[in-house]
Length: 442
Ligand code: PNW
Image 1: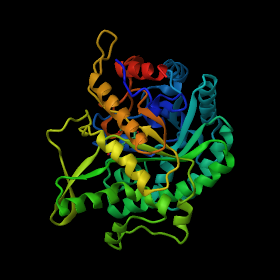
Image 2 (image 1 turned 60 degrees about the vertical axis):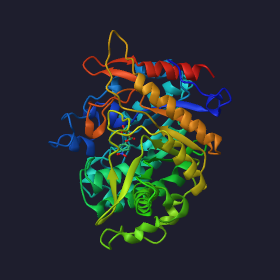
Image 3 (image 1 turned 45 degrees about the vertical axis):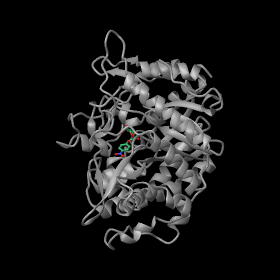
Image 4 (image 1 turned 120 degrees about the vertical axis):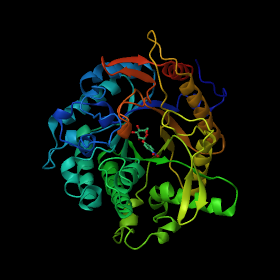
């Protein structure tokens, strides 16, 4: 039960940051002590979450946070990535809610006391419902309200935070939430997805200078997810399909931040699908970043198709996780190298990587050999990218513990710690023991 890397690997330097990650809605529970958010509403809508569950209790981390800090500390990690629940720390009138703020102050103080660096994401999908009622990310005003939230919360948290990310995965919030509707708020229109993305990237750009001013010593940036697109064959048609898919699902969310423009295939959008863009928006979006967070899980294969730019291919015989996501670690190395070649990147942190597996707790043990295999291959993929010149300073496992996996509810387990939801008992899985051993071996 051990991950192995070449003894000279940068991953084994003490300066390389190893951490575990979570997000507010997925673990906190205690929904009664905050404002409602779009995921509460989505969960309450029949047919949206597979097991009909919600985030009312989740891992009860809001009440169990002290033991969870002990758990994180027992893993020996350098850092813990968490997110702040906007509806927990702000009232409807835009003033801070001291009860919510004090929860995070207590948590951050406990982490710092243990020498664990807090990596804080300001938006991991839990938009206050009252803002959605006013148009949510389709309303440009929401970007300015996000800046205001970022301003107030970063002032309140003072110097407790090692790193701030504005957003987690603008792709998921805009595409899954507003374009295909499988995430909250469940809207499904192409123009909505593209407009929501534009406003989220704008909100990011508006907040960045505020973070730099209020928290000049933290590493401030954004977290993006990538699902690299591969052609099924090396035909020109399949290559074109994969390139268009890559622009639509990946480059769309990063190119504006570094190049101040959407990809070329923006021109293929019909006029009604194009987002409303104001003069100066791309200048705002290009605010310099101290770090880029990269989340990686899988790749997608595409082929050419009649009547549409690309068609996804299900790789039927390929190894897959419990999400049905193909296990293809070479795509992780390829992705990191290609981002490094395309953009003038700041230091990169892998802010999420991991796998859902059908875990079983037997006699107090979770022997998750498949997850151990996934981590071994993906840590090696990160090592290989570093060898090829990519500047990567850290790696976070998704997730610290099993939690509310969005539209899959509690059916999918991503943790390196097992959660028995009936008792809220946590058990470190064998993949977690291996992670601890790797970190301790440096
Ligand atoms: C990420 N996709 O979500 C999130 O940041 C986590 O909150 C989540 O639990 C984790 O990955 C596992 O799903 C994603 O469809 C959800 O490409 C969907 C996609 C990517 C990331």
